[in-house]
Image (cartoon, rainbow, N blue to C red):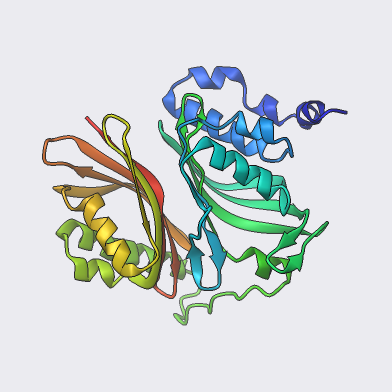
Length: 303
């Protein structure tokens, strides 16, 4: 059986009918991104890459116990880099299945939180993971374009190596006795509100108060002409500077999408620029111990 036959035997392509792409831009984003998600369950690099735009931005930080690190090779801005990423990844693990836990669809991105089942094909860090299976909980932003996903911006809840070796360090439960409430989500919602308030006030101190000193960042922002700026940071101070560039000229700011979970917050920020145009930024912020440990996402300016 060929890899193409195997894909069609699974039946998932049938779940993404062609008519969906013609309903509207929101549905087209769903079709584009979920076609890519399905393609990732194959080991066919050509097939996977056929679902990717040639105008790309991938942010795939490495999750460690210290946070989401962005070493060389984890912020990808060319199609060849992305293809190399998938070719290299196949030597460590393959995706067997992906359960979609949360989804937000718009006319320019799909956001998914998923629990993906992986099978090892080689080394994960210093551990030989060959033929081991494990489940990884990730939050992924897929900016979309007419010719495929424009990007895959992913944060992972726990380090792969800890999951493979059964050494996951779970966070300490909240001490609040009201255990019937979603306590962590409430805390993180308040954290996002404080952070948003600092951005609105253009107050570096209030912004810095909500960031871990080792805050990491990888965000792409496109202007009207499609010219891109990519902001990266590995410290809270560098992140403050990047936030000043992304939000410093915004007159007013609100959230059009908010998702607070027990390990990250996702928000789509909408701001008005001095000329009356708007800026959209879809950002995922992992959270640990009451601070934002990273910012990963994509944005664009619109008339």
